[in-house]
Image (cartoon, rainbow over the protein chains, first blue to last red):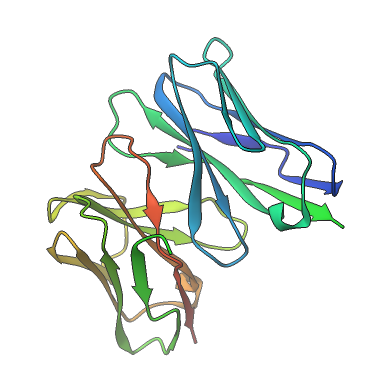
Length: 111
Length: 113
């Protein structure tokens, strides 16, 4: 069954605005990862946050993790048109061998 | 360039054809994966190989046949496919199968006519 669920399914913003995407999951995790996919291309790893971490930054990306609520958020600050892509969360479930991907959030950043 | 190379990038095949997708990783990883991505559907894990042994097969129809001759190469052999098998097939690798970062290839777009 699908573990991570991203919300919203689609998000449309203007350049310069911040974009926030959320991911909820159902069971205990070891880590949670965010990936980006440009249309028709492969997924690219953005950031990994471990279950004992609450927040992580990478450039304009900020990821938070709340294990009590079983949720994570990805914030992209000062968005650019080049940020237009689909964003997926992937969970490393405790006791399970491979990552489980969500359905993704499609982000459109208009110039 | 992610270190995972897939060929061909695009493939059109008839339902009676036999073709293969090829994947090669240059990262020294021990685990390799095939994923299927269809329009408006979540990413589906098809097969997982760890040290050239298949460790996961998620109820994939037998018309898809994987082969992992060594830790750097992974194939997906296709035969008697259906139009609903048209999708983006993504190969990926990771250091091991235990929750590591996964590195994806650019994918092979498959159209079955």
